[in-house]
Image 1 (tube, rainbow, N blue to C red):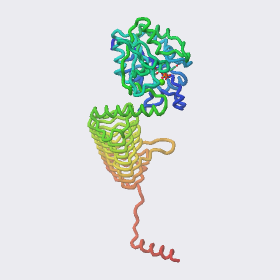
Image 2: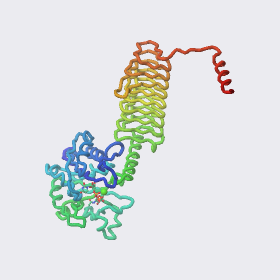
Image 3: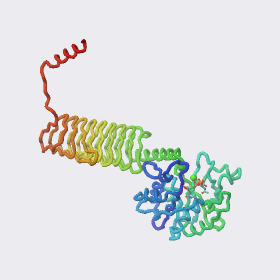
Image 4: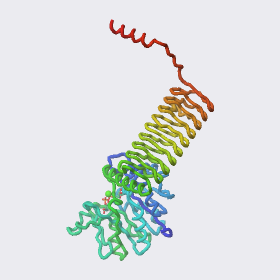
Length: 452
Ligand code: UD1
Ligand code: CA
């Protein structure tokens, strides 16, 4: 397909009324990525060289949100559809892009986040053959509400909206997904021939099929899965799409060598990367920006976001890795630990109940239970440096900015406010005082007081 140029026109003018949201519909997210960005990524994988995004109200919001979003290396151009006059009218809002001339034109919906690149590649290969218009159909369990695809000896002759169907046509299970591919030779001409002579007074993209047939062009339907054609109109369908996306991704993860003990309880983001032979225990959440290497174990109930975990490391149970956490090879983050913007060196251990933020922990260091890096003074964040092989005794507070050099010991229960040099032993607590027999005397005094 590399020799053919391709424009993807993505209709994203959903008003979002059924979403009951101030956010434009296509900016609602699946797996942490805006629905329309999923569609852009898919178009990119299908080889689109240019993308025209057609947006209605909230154009600025859409443009700002998509700044830097994936469409491969393609930066989308945004076109506004000021009045909502139908799908064909929407495509023509991108007239300037269409007029530049492409071999293939794909028309995609921004609220179909589960679309897969294979179906677009299939449509493009039909255009590379002798098809002029390719419509993507699907077979929903209940076809009610969708346009039906009317075929005759391999040619698609019409798309009939349900309300216009005859009794026999209504029984057709093959429905219009809305996605279409048009040969660039005739796309603009066909689109401009569509009228609005119908009950709604709208310009329907689907009319392209009968117009093209009237001109003796080749019009065909191809099929995609029901899931791939899943459109989102409200938040219930958004959750359905999320569930389908997660199920697909869990399967792909397992087939790539990741063990998921209870796959249905693990949630990934659009960009989660996990190496082979890593084991993910039940109830783990991956927010955006997580990269996990091979041979890692993520124990149950952990929450990771913006974090990197290197080979052989273990995390959790009940661990939270926040953005900027880097867990190096064979390091251990144990239960009830939070790590933020901190590098935990190779083989270092943070086994229990600690907060390590804005810090660097050297290789092989041991951070005792309950250790806290006191990184925030209410205005600024400060850095804690812990050297290789250092030992931080349990229940210590490290008041940043502070540095504990390699091989140093910090006594349990310390509040460390000054730097500790290499191999030193630091006590940051009051000296213990013990008085023989005074416990007994105190008990007698207190019980006597109570009797009075
Ligand atoms: C459309 C198809 C129908 C198909 C169904 C699949 C037509 C006439 N009908 O119906 O055959 O089975 O999709 O879901 O195309 N849009 C704009 N501007 C407009 C109108 C629509 O950008 O002026 C966008 C919408 O945001 C949406 C898409 O086009 O992403 C589809 O529009 P919608 O009104 O939902 O079409 P359906 O009635 O669902
Ligand atoms: Ca729709």
